[in-house]
Image 1 (spheres, one colour):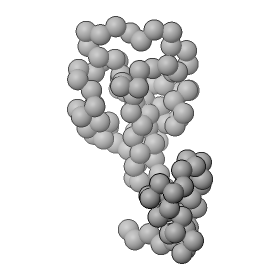
Image 2: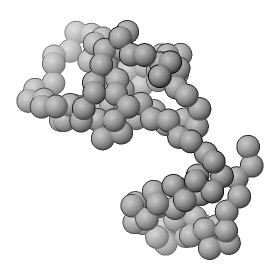
Image 3: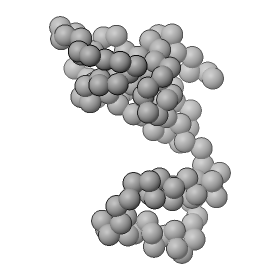
Image 4: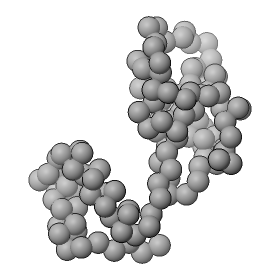
Length: 121
């Protein structure tokens, strides 16, 4: 799918790529505006897991403080399928157990066991 943008948006994108601009919120806003202008919908799924034989992460409250090495934010421009999550686990985890997911991009609420997640909604 071709994506179009204004000359100003293109120049801003080049400035971010060159490291001349670094404001993450400004970059996210640029992406939202380009996506909206091109009818692009993005899908997100936060994935976290424990490693078999490891210990449970300590002091976890409402999904926070989970080890970054056992967390992955999957981003796609099409609906996410179970096979996409399986691919992430194959490439990012060693021996994952107790896999949970949420569509909350901040990873705070909605954590659900992977086998209970409804990929059709």
